Image (tube, rainbow, N blue to C red; front, side, top):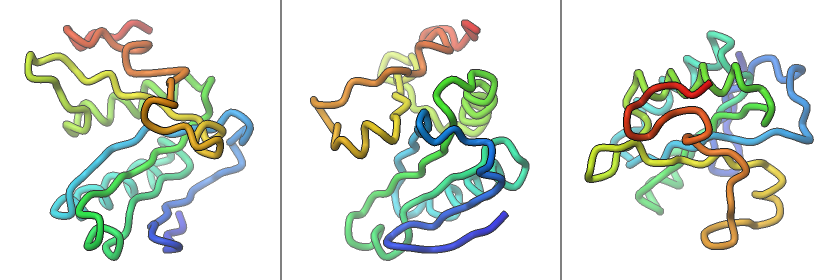
Length: 143
């Protein structure tokens, strides 16, 4: 695994030969500055263990300015097995928030093509989200 810093991000890169780049996207985890060590550990772990090939997170400089950050965990859109493995990891490490009524937030998977097209907020409609894999109320797997 290689770790490098560039333009406000810390990258964790493993074997990216497995990507189909046309279909690549990311699951995101939003965090506060005090969670930086936790996020760094999680990004390093999933790449180092070969669970996914690449992850990145906001660096300390950006966190000092914005007071929040995001970690991105990259997977090919159609790699359902890896989606499930990563989402299991998220669940085991409390990385998927729950709503006030105790159901899992329906976090989206965002394609890089959507990011490049500047699809954010109301202009963003995920093609895949947590509910495609998991019953949000019970936490039981659908696939």
